[in-house]
Image: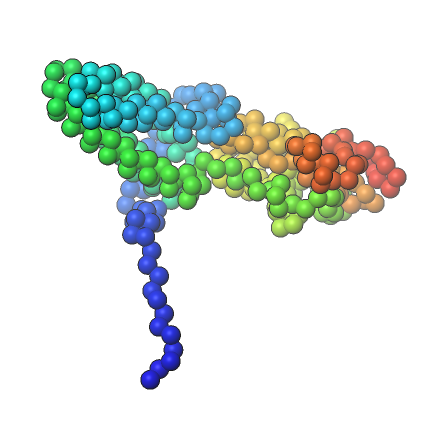
Length: 325
Ligand code: FES
């Protein structure tokens, strides 16, 4: 008799399997390409960054969906109580009024995602569009005095918007579509100065990739001699900034065009909503050294020695050169 223990088959959640298949399913790609072109061609100007949520520090879409979802959920609660159909109708109307701006924020974010994220995002948008249509029907029925049918459409709308929410959660958390892709950098890079190469390895005006503790670093030496160093993976979706373009003291991501100020990593242009972690720089014995610039003073004191310098304004110390190339 065999003594080998029988292996138990690991069963994956069928819902997760379905969502993973949706990410890989290319059937709707031509539609995605056409809609993406349409969204990108909207004449939004600087308003596009407002819709992305650059002013907020994270995508505005999750904030904007609070009103329609909250209103519609509250309407469903009122619909379960007798004699509250009128108030429920008002809430259905409020949700409808807030649906368009919420959809616009989502669409502008969606148009700057990876293919797999866009596939899930398209179905997310379809579920929410269906929900909006059902709530519009619910609202129309209530106005015509057909409260029973209005309630029925409302509950169907709630089911559709719940499917949209499920897909939105998958998109945001499992696929990290709205996350800051540079968040972990301050937790990974060890304290202190790190030597990353001889000064001659950094031609003026050209972005160069180096790494510190396996974290890719973008280094740019300006023609005037100032050295800048930022985390190299774009905070939007991890694009390679060292392959981007350097213009007017900023680097532009090659993937979706986010712009980051070289001096401090600030995101001057979306779709990125978070800045790039920045590094202090100095030149010692003809070699470039970088040190993560801590934002939190207490953390800075705890993690670093006291010889703090600012990027591009290196201190002249014993054995420390100024950053002129
Ligand atoms: S990865 Fe999207 S802008 Fe950089």
